[in-house]
Length: 202
Image (cartoon, rainbow, N blue to C red; front, side, top):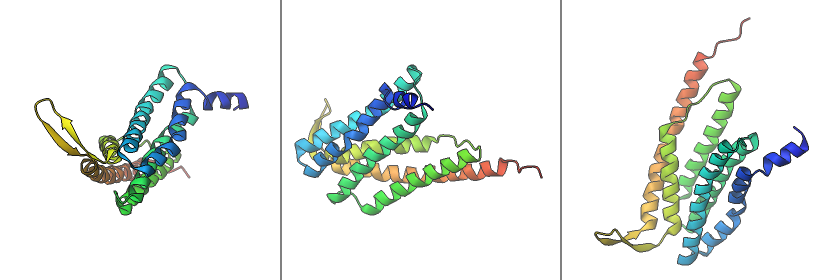
């Protein structure tokens, strides 16, 4: 690929949105480090915007015909980086156990490696509904733990205090179990795929 084509690929609009999610991580971590109610809320807003741009950049790439290898590599990487950054800061503040984060990261590395192996063998690993649920619970859980503090929420009919830290923590716990289950299903799909691959003729 020519150098100019690579530059156009890296700096097109969808990929620039993805780069923005990466570049905001240091600011996001600094806000979480300060940990005041205001800083936590701003960090939560940045995390939410990052989640929104994850959908927007993919939509724009498809709509504008700008899907690229760079985007396919960078987009999931940006997602994992900001979630990992959030979890590291939660561990730093003692809000989340390190062993839970170790399980989450181990699962992500294992599934990423498995997908690479499957692709090399010509095996297609179908996306799992449990994996999508894992992502949803993880994002909501991490967001809740970033907000951290207890706020009075008006439900129109009644208002009640909501401890966002506790709520987020249990969402994260559910996401860990869903992640382990979906990881197992990916490995099972890989084993089944290997069994269906025809051995080369001698």
